Image (cartoon, rainbow, N blue to C red; front, top):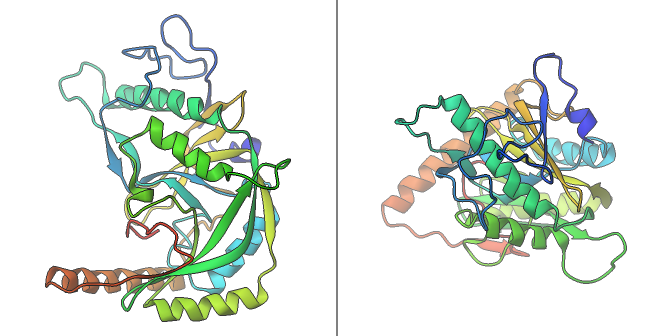
Length: 317
């Protein structure tokens, strides 16, 4: 729930609510920093100067109110010693990497003003998509792996459906398609084919290790379901930073995008990176460095996919 996300000890850290239905005559969105847009009209797709960043993502995360899903996913990631345990919440990337602004050095406006205008324009496009997708349900009852000799990833499959519909297209996949149309430069999640949503459980030295972990997890996993009324824009600062909520994107016909400045951590996320998590992350980083050197020398890696999600971008998801 948004109310739980807005619980911040800093009294000056107010969440800015952007009502996508009511921009004023000057292009200022109600609840924003009141900086007018260069063009108050929302284009067919996002056109503001920007670049892709692995510090930004649009993703599905179980809402904080869904405590059972958080507890179960957190426990399995901990048991599997996930190197991303501190930096990432349990998530399924929809658009990753996502966008950050390119600043105009010749502009009279400060970087803060340019950033605020960028976020407000982005919120308009996110809301345009969110209004086309009603809240839905997600069930996690199956797992898969991908990788090869030098890399393995264990993932959970977030199967989505609308509450009243048993069969048909999955709303999470439809949502990805709609978002990609609004942000056509962000196609990385299906660059190897169709979009296959997945929640990373952990990383391994090779796919055989990931398959062994999959077998163990499946032997004790109890299927869980949770309601998805919103998705999130997450942001991190630097390679060691934790992904925090920069915007809450409500789904449905009355969609609102709530901007959070500064971004806020999910309540169930760890406040510090424990030593075991750091050690696992450094070990994974070293494996990737060795793998990159091997590929640069002309080696070829054949990745094997078990139930085949889209391959991750390799930026420590």
